[in-house]
Image (tube, rainbow, N blue to C red; front, side, top):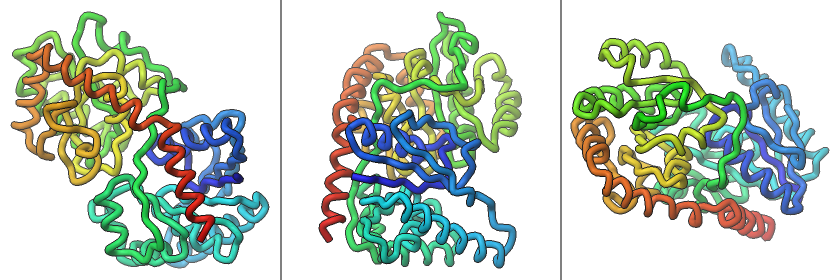
Length: 371
């Protein structure tokens, strides 16, 4: 098949990573794949490999006012339609809800199947009422919409005009590939130290302040343990200030965003995720694939699809500092528990293998093309 992706950019993020993983897999298995971004190539973080075609549509400018938004979005629709027509795809995938709306409008009347994706649970990350209305209405013009969790799929069925809704989790590309920037774990923590690792964008929804405060409550009893929060984002300065206020500069570290995140999973002894909301958490899936004992907030969607509490990880209520601190203490103190959770966690490698998830997508394509 000829498969096209439309996405805002290939900067660091879950949708971007899934786009890279699936496009590479389909390209090396014989499909012709093109990834189109609205933003410039300079914003790309993920490598698509030599077999995937890439094209920037040069339509990434942010809207300055209502009139500019109207003109910009019309330009995006026309340019996307023109470039898709030139590629002549069998299937077009919009990665994220706004890209899905763009694909729905740009592909009206074109002889291709159109697939939208919902990457979050919409009630947890609402758009403006008008933008949400446009996205919901545009789903009517798509052949199918793919959600990451059953709860999100139920919301789509109840609140949009989608013709068909499917649930497909994110794939786990194994082993993880490395890219720049390369950050050596031993440059942050000495080899003899134990590491609690968190990975994610340094932004409010990840609730890393709660993680730091929970660690601060137990760290004095575990002097050989450190907390490393890997990533970058708008809250970096705020989080470092909070760390310093806690007097934890020598126990909590912010190395930055790493392209070799697999090396950090291998270095860590525990993985912690404290998100207030998630779509489908790639970092949690990757950590479990590396056999890390994990503790995660049980936010409305995502972690509970991966973790069976007490069997392959621990779940705690979002924002509950006491429960998080108690869970960290339990894991830090009990090596046998860490080992037991680790042995079960690594089983996700088989369940979320790229070949398996890829086939689920191909089945959706076949059904959509048969409509």
